[in-house]
Image (cartoon, rainbow, N blue to C red):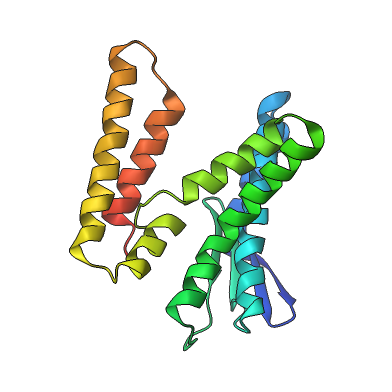
Length: 193
């Protein structure tokens, strides 16, 4: 359900009720959790602005940007024609923005705070070769959706699962790792192309 619709140039920006509900819930948290979630949301917005900038650079801005409880979704214009190289640049742009911000923060501050770490994690996370992520889409484009893509993605998921099992067996249970693996497996098997 869309609650608010804005137009920025030719781009429609849609803000759903669920997005406002999540933001409201986060602002009710006192302390560092609310700050961390808002910081992560800002990093996600910067990531999507990287994609939007690259799309605009190629003259194909998205038709709409949807903010919802699950994140931010870009919808390209129907009938857009881009080359494989342009598509790969657009996909790399979001991660590049996050990694560049983390690098700049490290260079100019001499350390990594939560904002820089969140950007670093988001950039690396989205480069993983999982179908729904930028890295998985880049892999599919680079290898023309060949069987080797399935092998690489399967190998990566098995490797990640083995790391998770090793941590669990050693008593180092990481809830975020379990959630991350669950999300990646869901994206791989149910995320579509």
